[in-house]
Amino acid sequence: VQLQASGGGLVQPGGSLRLSCAASGSIFSASVMGWYRLAPGKQRLLVVRITDNWRTSYADSVRGRFSVSRDNAKNTVDLQMEDLKREDTAVYYCRLDYRGSTWWGQGTLVTVSS
Image 1 (cartoon, rainbow, N blue to C red):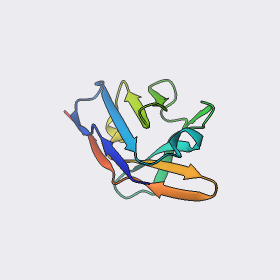
Image 2: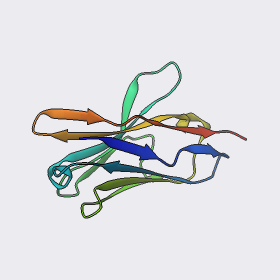
Image 3: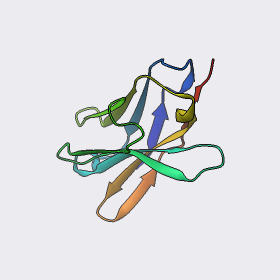
């Protein structure tokens, strides 16, 4: 399995950005997908998780601003980020979990700054 994240960039506070993660292989539809982020000086933390049956779990810090979706036909999981704040600045990683195994994407940098 290979994960390719894209969509990061520089955005002003209050702005929006959409991240996408494309997965190779045939297990995507049966996998739990997640977005995590690593901010400077902090640990990598869960942003949101979406299960194979579309149950979602958001971090409190992003609930109501971020929205996750998946397309099993395209093997992609997207993260729509609204009302971005400076504290959302981080490298965002997608993650795939399947039957006890985990794969990580390479990360995409989101910088929220004026």
